[in-house]
Length: 84
Image (cartoon, rainbow, N blue to C red; front, side):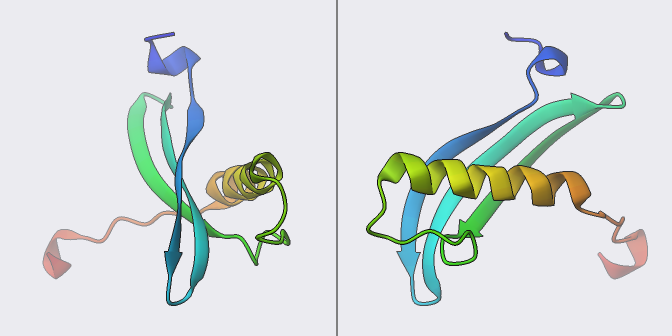
């Protein structure tokens, strides 16, 4: 379990309320193609089509499914040394 190559995961952190809405926060960790990665993901619960009155387990599950789907399809780009 300590080897990240065998344990790519997205872990629930907390739920926060901001002016823009209510967000479920997750932390992604793992290794893919020899590269270790770590990312923070915030999912707006209204975008996940859940209601704040729903059970917490349902909110977390729906938001986690959305986080995994979007994280897998994300296209990351190198910012470049010129813009640093």
